[in-house]
Length: 51
Image (cartoon, rainbow, N blue to C red; front, top):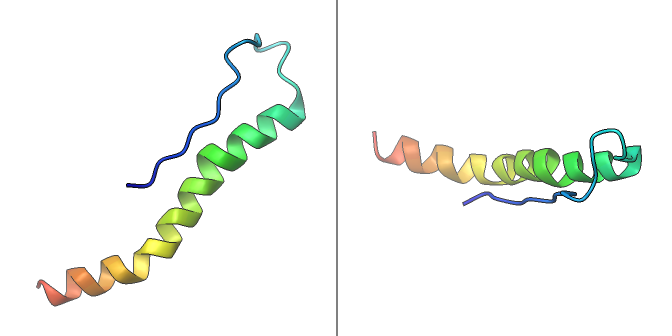
């Protein structure tokens, strides 16, 4: 499982600061990308071994 989440539910869209938005994207998107990249070699080996 590759899952992470950061939210700021108390802020309206107008009130969200750029630093908060960058943190949300960093955790929610960049974190998922880095997890997939780390797992990809193992997943490819497993897929190749089962075909």
